[in-house]
Amino acid sequence: MTDTTAAAQQQQAATPDTPTVVRERIPHEIVASVLAATTAFIGGTALHLPPWAIFIAWAGTFLLGGPNLVNAKKLWFAMPMGSTYALIIVQLETNWGTSFGDSQFARNCFAALCILVINTTLMYTGRIGLFALIPGMFFGFASYFATFFGGFGYDAGNPWSAWLCVIAMNALGPVYAWLSVRLAFPVKEGA
Image: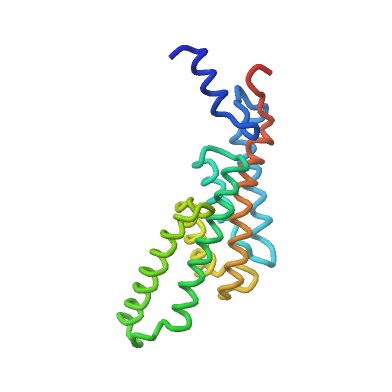
């Protein structure tokens, strides 16, 4: 492959939101670390928000190829849907967890049934265009459980508080990913 062909492919792969970068004026590692430090002020408030949920979505944005509106929208639709399915599991187990009996085995059987049904439904939901990013749904799914069982949110232990908080924090992930590129002040090819 010639340099001209490689440059043409690189230019073609770039979108208006993600310029082909030759160099960054400020190293990405520095910008990302400064942004990461700002999450301490998000989680360290009276709302006790889960700042690590930002990192999950931030990393997910780069797994999709980098920050742009298309990738952000995929995550913004998928993650809340995953969190919603996790909320349903928590509600089912909270309200009907002893339906099969009070023993740990009975509770585990009920939990297994909930996970089987809800997880299957989540994955079938991935066949709907808006929610096709199944890994994104699992980012939201896992983030919700970590938020709820970790005692995060403005009302720790409240399933709805955890749901609102994790959706907000996951939504910031693509924003942080975009900022981490933009605040490095990239120099476009040929500039």
